[in-house]
Length: 136
Image 1 (cartoon, helix red, strand yellow):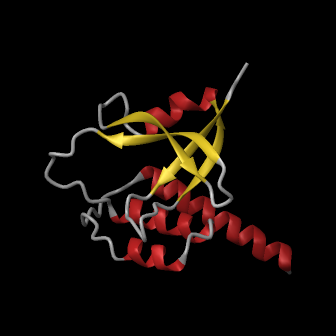
Image 2: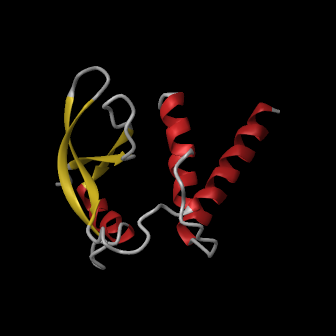
């Protein structure tokens, strides 16, 4: 039997003592793939559980990932990762003030290939094209 996990994507930039993010429900069968994507086996991040409070006041037990090596030279997000975070925040209706804070975050300047980012952007292009075609 697959259980459903609540996965929270957090943006650790504060606005009036709040951290904004989104919560996704995933099957436990998806956890190994998610752990691999987040670099758990390479000891980059570790999964942790935490409780979050929704806007309606509900408490949810969620899984998120905590960076393990905070002493490495540059812990800033890549421009690609930051771009995905901003797109997600906009799509989820995160307050504009918080999105502005995300947009002000300094990235690490990485300009090499990011396969997952390329897949995300291609999927967005296909969805946009599909939506535009349906409107015609």
